[in-house]
Every structure is written in structure tokens, then in C-alpha cells.
Image 1: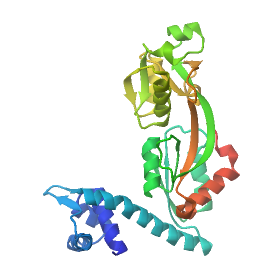
Image 2 (image 1 turned 120 degrees about the horizontal axis):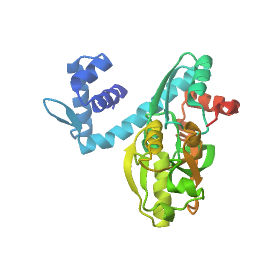
Image 3 (image 1 turned 180 degrees about the vertical axis):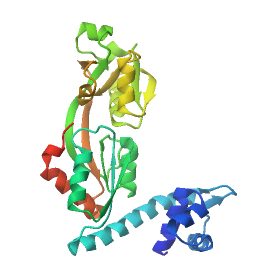
Image 4 (image 1 turned 135 degrees about the horizontal axis):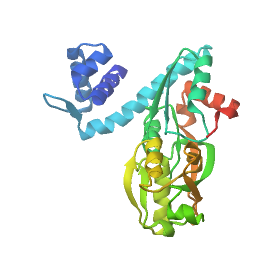
Length: 298
């Protein structure tokens, strides 16, 4: 099994199209097709279901994709490690992060990294913590700033960044804001909630806390960005349970402590693969983060 066969296979799987994958790889379509056929012959099974419009992975193809991505990530890390020993950090830094993650100023950190390592290409992906953990585990990301949850892959290393309580945000005229007291899940069972998609860290924390309290809640307004959530709460269309630092983004909203949620604490971490698979670029970024604590603000 040759590395180029795996590279070709991953490209077709990502693009779901032979022509687009060939263009991206800068190889002929016939050569790409021959490479995939050689891989299928070696594994003695089809890897793609081909139609006139696109290609999709077979069950065997899906199993191979995860392993192929890990192998290619390890090969890339090996090349970058050799370059690092020679005194030059090259290659790619693939970083993932949730929006408005606490404990690190991502833009400032990356700017400092670029000044120190101009030969490294920076790639940034923003997504929910669940997806980011999966991508680090699969080798598609070098590291991610995320909210750790028990469902994340056990092989990942989690470096703590910060921890803070969750609070309830609501319109200042809301009955709970007028009362001005701490709230519990039981107080909130009849409320309409604004929240993020289920993959986001704050949503996962809140869902788990309410489930542990045995309280069902209605998430009627589901968004995928922080400012939309704040806008909806400001218009009194619902309430939201969010990390405490979100309150500073919209001072007009009331913020109330949330009690009776056990371990409902917003804990952010840097997720990395095992040390043997951590790229030199990821190690350099973590060294910079640890050396510049002032970059880690909410």
C-alpha cells in the first residue's frame, strides 16, 4: 500500500468527485482512477459507490478513511519533526476552536505564532466541541480549543485552560430578572430557551445538567453563533444558560447564578493527540500559549 494511494483515496472521499479531486491533487483523472483501483484490488473490496454525479464511501471505505487520515497525519508529523530538528519549523498548523472560547485569545495567539514561525501555514476551523474532538482524534486537526466532555475520545490529551460557572441570561424585564435571585433547573422548566446546536460545549453542559436534575426544557430557538443568541435573549424571546463571560458581551442583559446543577462548570481545554502524534507546530503553539498567559483572556 503506497502513501500516494492513501492520499488519492482521502482526496476523493473529501470531494466526493474524481474530477475535482484530480484537479486539487494536480494529477490526471485516469491516474487517480487507476490509483483507487489499485487500492481496491489490494484490499479486495470496493471503497466507493460510483454514480454519474458523485461518489460515496462504502462501509469498507468509511473504515479505511479514519485509518488513512491517521496515517497521513503521522507522516506529515514525521516530516515536520525532521524539519524542526534542522532548526526550521515548516508545514501546517491545523487548529480548531469554538466561538468565543474562554481561556485563550485565539487571534492574538496565532498572530504571535506567525511572527515566530512564518514558514508554517495556519489553517483555522471553527466548529462545535464534539466535532473538534473527533477531528483531532482522526488527525485532521493538530489541536483544538474546546470544551471537554466525557464522550470525547479517551486517547486525547486535555490541557486545562480555564473554568467558570454557567449563568442564566435574560431580558432585564423578565420575571426572573425582576426577582433577582439565583435560579435552579426546577425554576426554569417552563421557560423557552435560546441555545446552541447540540454539538457546542455550552449546550452539552446545560443539557447534561438539566438531565441530571430530571428537568425537561424546551430549546425553541437554536443558533450557531453567540451574537444571534444574545440578540434573541435581548428581544425577550427566550432565556439562555451560558458561560459567565458571555454576560460581558451584552451588558444590558440580566445575569443570574444557576444553582443545583452539580458539576455544571464550563471548562475549556486544549485538546491534543497523544504526545507521540503531536506535531511540532502544535507543540510550538502550546509553548507560546504557556509562555504568554496574558493571551488567555475571556
